[in-house]
Image 1: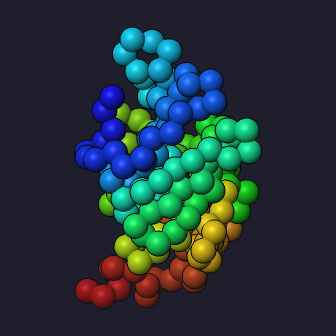
Image 2: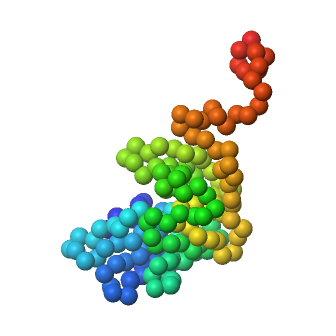
Image 3: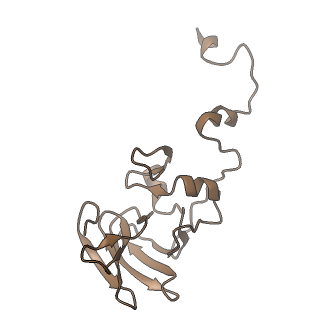
Length: 171
């Protein structure tokens, strides 16, 4: 089993012993299918902790996970792959479900598309995707009401447009 870049610090079996939950110092939690000779990762990893994940356990008949990390947070996650956090746009979370350890929120493609970057001091409390809540910290909520991306990125500007503004005006 390949678990990112390093040390696995916690493992827990499901009640039927067909799956294994692992937490590691690559900041992720992963679920493994043990029903075959070669264990396979099930779905995407749970990402969002900003440091080594020390422990992860199942809750509520294995429909949720609780995890703790060296970043000082405890997170509660939905196991369901299609779950999104109700405080952020579902379309963005579905198209850009990943958060890497460098703070980039990105797509799950071979060559990922980047959505935005979180500065280090915001990463430990940012709630995205399957993360439902933080236990011992105030979650970072981003206002996406004026957020645009892709070919529509320029629509975020709402200021006046005049001949004296823009790069040409400074020459």
